[in-house]
Image 1 (cartoon, chains in turn cyan, purple):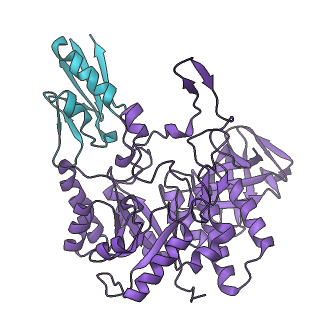
Image 2: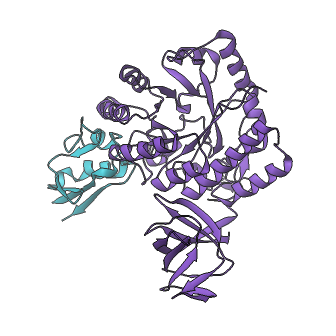
Image 3: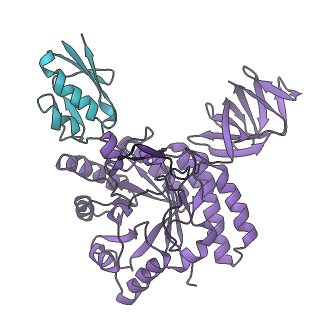
Length: 75
Length: 413
């Protein structure tokens, strides 16, 4: 399993994560920031646990994030 | 020279401290960003739409105009947020929106809020001025023009009688002071290329400011070019020739630096204010210029040059990393209380020491900036020479301070 952590308030809505991991990320029409699909908000940090199949593309999302607010923890 | 009483000094505001400093230093207007659609989206001290009411309240009270920047590249998914921000601006009676994307300009026009065309739109000729005149009364020219070109544009505006939506002649704004981009503003892809962080979405990583080595790929020979930071431009400073800038018909002087601290805003705004007033009164002397330049050098800067305005060749590059400020501030303590009758502030020392004769600076979201020299320090109402970490003490400050205001000691850098 892998846990994806996302500090949403700092997102600048560049769309980078959506380009590389469209199954897990979607830009909110409401405020232009990215939403972590399935993520639960814990004090501003959105978190979700997913299977290792998603590791590769979410690693790309983390690496491509210009403000470095996506983190992966392999469990 | 034309009448100068309509010259406007526009200050950068990235925090409430900077806002208070800008107002106290005598700016005519301020500009700021909310949420992420502005060129300082990465900066951690951005305002939110909730702060708009407070910003506007303070500006209205001080009779200062306030402009909101929405000047990044906009994608389809940003449109709704852009509209929300513009609507909030209209509701809070913001003086205008600084935009570069046509979608933002079009929506502002519909919403009935004045538009300034951002430097990100790179207006470099009179035809483009005419093109944007349908939308905007104020246009910020590209920072890469020479003053001769600027003058030509302002002269043509008068000749052709190019008017904005208000019916008044279009007013021209330029950047007078602050950081310059190594590329044409808004067209740099260096940060995007190396860190996937687009400067044009306000996420510039500023890697042009670093040191680079040129490698000859055939032989692997490395060259450090003249020991200079080959891509890091020095800061623009037009103060020594501000009379020429105003003579070119510029009516709004914008100071760059929404990511910089309140002391920078205070120093730059007050110097440019005094210089503009001096030009108006015909007392813009060499001696005064030297004094202002010394003051400007005390706050964050990468060394100064005159940008592209005087038509000189490119390549005034920086020779060191970070600031060349001649002074630096050291955090020493926080405000506790203010005794208004005697003009004395109580503080708590949190680090280092402070003694008689030291120069100090106090900053706070409402206080803005207070500078002074320590004349007297008292602990438990007894005069002392020096205070150290942990001490509670009082200090004559001259103006009101607030609890949690920060106290700095000013030392030579």
